[in-house]
Length: 254
Image (tube, rainbow, N blue to C red; front, side):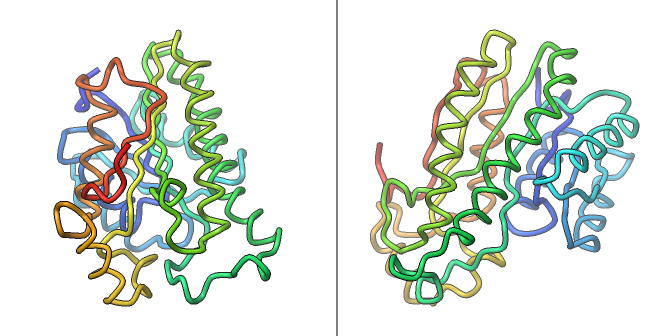
């Protein structure tokens, strides 16, 4: 199915990387559900730029399966067809500032639980609630947003990194389970992005250090991460599933 025929749910799409992914799908002709939790204004503004009813901004807490189900039902009513493509981008509140994160001796289970709930439970809810529509369409694409930190843990983001590593395992088990139904499940893992709300607290010298360590000598942008999500949803990615594509300028090489 061409991207222009897909109905795409992007979670956490009001700002930052999520907004870049939503715009990329809209620019490719898709119809898009711009999910948000608190940032109603930016989400509705983004949806309004699409015109002709090609985007709808819908509030839902992705950790709540009931809210996710209601969001998908509203999206189907709006577009007249089910969501075929899910991009799991929503992130529990997090600041990418290593100095402010809990170290090993301070880390609490509550911090881990918050990240697992937002990352793993959120992705599980969206996939499960979208599955009936994907099955009716005979087509499905799931793109999970990961991180290169579980391959290169240079900063002590214990809770965030552990949750994203678990999401990669879920990505691969879902890929095996859903592959016979023409549903692919993949992950796009970035490094530090320049610049999103989550990375706004990152010191400039950290950006410079990471950039100098990459073959491309620069920091990845949200738009470049969005390009990889488009690939997995496009016909060019039709035989790719269970994979983790690292988009970080070559800092981490598989």
